[in-house]
Length: 359
Image (cartoon, rainbow, N blue to C red; front, side, top):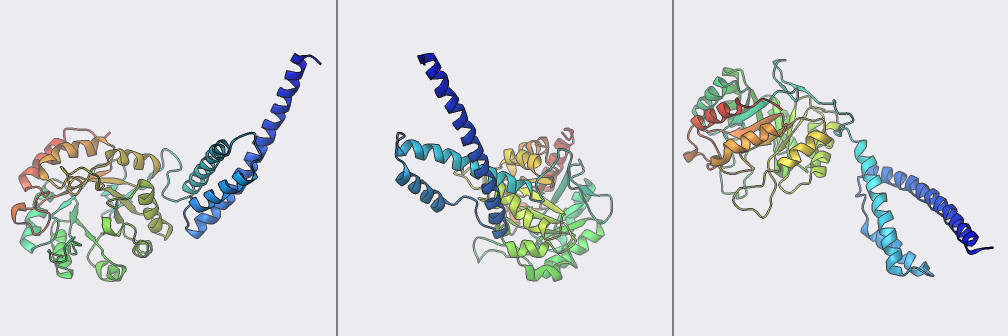
């Protein structure tokens, strides 16, 4: 046998081994898929570092060469990484909030049968940070109504960092908000703090609001999945987009498909704004989920002087709406005074937004 023949024979053996490796990798992938299903049912993390370390140790002990242990570990880490990606992609493809086709979208229709979120329009959600008095809510609602705003913030419970700060007016605040909303033919959204409040709040609110602190409160999310009113879900201050979507899944999988996602900024090292507005996250959410996405330019910035550019960016991002806080006199507001717009500033913002078409 010539050297050329010998080379060809060895290459043929390699081809056979490649096919055997491919078959084994495919068999491994099928088992990994089944493992992923079980982990999803259990609600467990797909990545298990202890299990990965255990497998690598076993491979090192079994390795007889010629590859070094470092090479073997590097090769199998790539296999593990690909397997994990396969598990996660298949699990994600089955969740209800994941977009299955480019034209799939959830359209939420409010009680008037006309106001919709997610239908291609650009809705404004606005009002004070918190209900403080009938006069404050009435003056704000009158200004918002004049600009066609249909969804009024009626926050009666205010979770604050300090227990000594204003915590909201409670049910009395909801009564004020409902009375004002009825006067101006508007809808009320208000934050719920605990599932025990659902029955009481059903009489006052049109849209339940889950704040950033409660984004991962699975007990509350499941309970809201059993009602027939829309739910606004805010992204947690350090939540990944995946965690955000899984939080929405708790509500949708429990029976309520009417969920609105709000990007309100995430905590980073930057100090010039209250949070960092993740506008790229809005684009990803619109690509991966069929749920409507609204951008909160108040809590993300924590300051009123950059509301105009953030509003333009929010509309240009393809978001379904904008959340902005407005107060008749922010200087004396009982919470978040620095970020609430004066009514003339709100009108300027609306004038500016009207210049730009919906993407």
